[in-house]
Image (cartoon, rainbow, N blue to C red; front, side):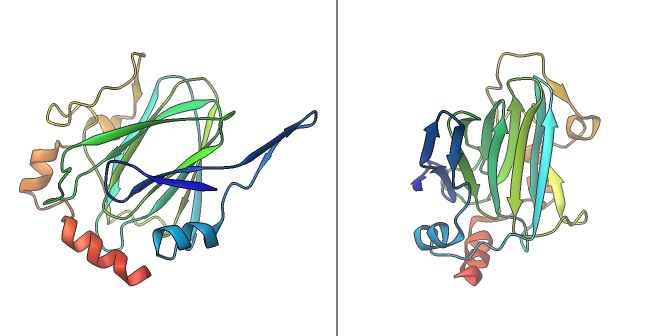
Length: 197
């Protein structure tokens, strides 16, 4: 397992060593020990979520308030996605920026994002299956969202006919969330993460 830090602080690309033969493909899809050694923190899985999406489905932009927020380990088991990590942490050097990583079934990789970051993805194929391993159970009172078409974020979504849930389409933009004090700060996120050392 190879772990590479991405340009958004608190996010990493995880590459798995795969073994191919005439039966198919095998790889270790999660190693808590190796992840913990590299990231210098604990990541205890408390819930897993699986989505099956049609081509063009846009899920996000989602995040959870700190504390406890959610750290996420995201994999694409079938099909392919463009995965987006969005920095919504006030005072972060990359506040309002995002990074896109493509995940697909035949190139086993994952994304790890820590507490305080926002996340979204677009399915590039029909019947795309994505699994998220998270370290906190779903807490609707702490779950929040940003409108995926916020002009300030100006995310370059794939050139597809996008399908967005009514809930996601009605979310507020980043500036509104900031004015309503609904965004985590960089400092509170990083300080909270230290409790998992």
